[in-house]
Each structure stands twice: as structure tokens, then as C-alpha cells.
Length: 123
Image (cartoon, rainbow, N blue to C red; front, side, top):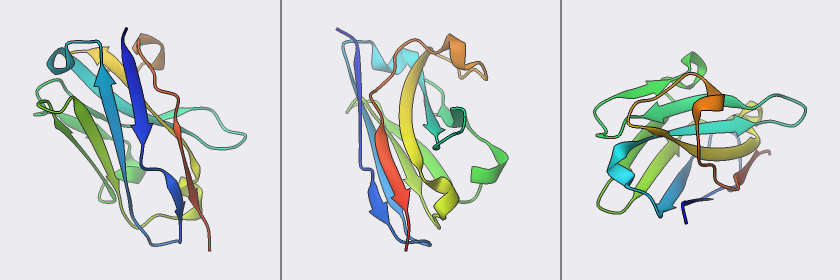
């Protein structure tokens, strides 16, 4: 059974940092790109970062560049999202999802999804 499990969310003060993890099982991990999405209250889900299957290619939405860093450890079947200098606008449920080998800009092409982890940025 293919499964993704996110962890690492929580409550953090503005300017703080969090490291999210996405643990995968039941799939050939090093054949899949992994993307992070987020959905803020009252807003549509958006893709914020993606890393290709080999880890050589990474992509970020413009607003995340310089603050978020995506990485993966294929030996551990895990992808990480280091989030720095968080603001209240980063409050959302964060999801990871799979796509075969390369990243895609189309959310509908992502096949496996985790249950999400809540990130709340508040003073």
C-alpha cells in the first residue's frame, strides 16, 4: 500500500523555523518526484516546492525562494522541507504528494497524497 505521512508541523512564532518531513512507503521512492503543497484557510491548495526523483532538480514558487529549502534522503524514503523566517501568511495545512520521476506544475497529475500536517504561525 502506497502511503505518505507528513510530520513536523506545529505552532511557531513569526520569524521562526520548522522542518517538515514526508515519509513514503509502498512505492519505489527513488523513481518519484515529491512536491509540497499547502492550503490556507479559505484558499485553494497551492504547490510550493518540488524535488525530482534524483534530488538534482528542485523548484520553488517565487514567494518561497530564499526561505524554504527542499531536500530528500532516498535511503530513508523521506523528503524534507526546511521553512525559515515564517510569517502568519504561511499558516496552512502542508501536504506532500508524488509524481513519477519529474516534477509537474499540475496538481491533478500527482497521484499519492499524505494526510497533511498543520503549520500555524502566530505570536
